[in-house]
Image (cartoon, rainbow, N blue to C red; front, side):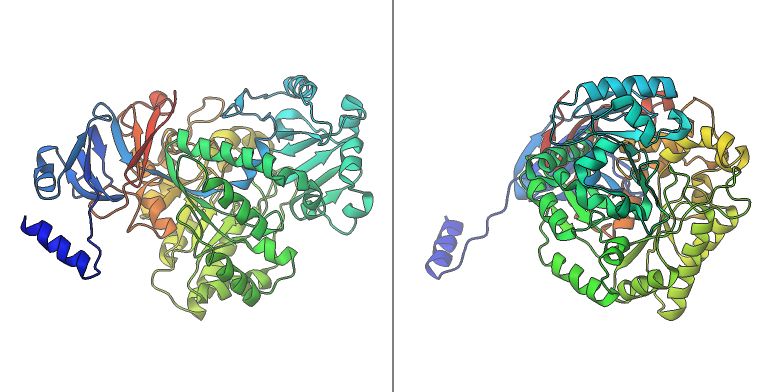
Length: 568
């Protein structure tokens, strides 16, 4: 009665009465908190999107007594972990590529269907022609993503002309950094020989555009961004996130298609309307500004204006990405001596002076710098650049992050540690590439040491694991397996000393990934005060066998305390 009188008095005086949302206590067979002080639990209390308490159901008694609430036992037979974080994805790439079929060396399971891999030229040609027959939209060329010459043989413009005649056909390389088309495709898009002139990264005779040469082609692919097509593709990406327990993802390349504002608007429009919420953090990229001739100071101003549009689901973060060398899938990464065994060379993606100027501008503005670096020569550039930035403008917690980490040396691991660098690695590279690259490009010793995660763990360097979706499946459980089991696509065992421990691998998609995002205060572990983001699994990722790890089912996600079941 007294409380009612107080409430009435406050209302009469013009004050709102604050009401607290009811507490929900979720129970589970096991909760992996990723908090060393309390690593395991069986109950977690959630209120207004944040965690109130963690422990046993008995431990929740004070919370329920003081704040009221209910016990939700829907996950009582399941394993709960923090919502998975993928610290390096490209939402627009799956949004574009899932508009078409996948045909790669590896198998793909997507919201659009099952796409078995092809590992020989004969199998690739047969499947490609069958998929092309199913293409029914005369307004756009048939595009298949996943081609790689080391598996599928060399296929150029003349081959596609011979196989498909006047049907427009394009092959999107497994790296995403290359396109090959036939005469009919280039004619449909209005791409001419003149577009290939003036760049070493285009070969008109072969119908081949790659790395920097793609800027002549990408503007002609506007149909990929038509709202209905892109929207459906973006829904595929968000579905993949949910199906695989990913509640937060860090985009690493907003603006790669030349119109960052269009891309931000398109991603936000779909993500904010999608019925299963998630967080997408967008990262501006140097190649966008270089291609548009935007100077570093203006680039910073542009990014600030994009950040003014941030929402809870889609935000431009305080991250900036550099591009050092070319794609590992294309064999265009930069390797130090002895280089590629067949004598070909990689490419550099941007001039050094310009890279420094952009890095310094965003570094001084308080942004976290990330750098795409695949080969050991690129790792050396990263180390030199970080050392220069620290001398010019010292920082104690810079978290500059080397992205991908396809190949490096033990000496570079020690240098990265000394400089306080972080690594966001793609362990899938070792799985899919090391076996074939050992015979064709790198030799068996260097190929076996690709993605040397054990070295990083021994050195105490924070490691995040990413998919670079679609360079690997958007599946943190697959990344944990690839990093800890360290097998190849052919089933061969890799160097055991370079495997990541299972615990460190799970950290790499939870709390250590949150550290790379700069969101460790909110995300990545299950403790009182953090946002209540969880992934609900049918088995424990720390104790199942390697063979079982990839087959763990994600049963649901919990986003800010609200559950979203995954259909099976």
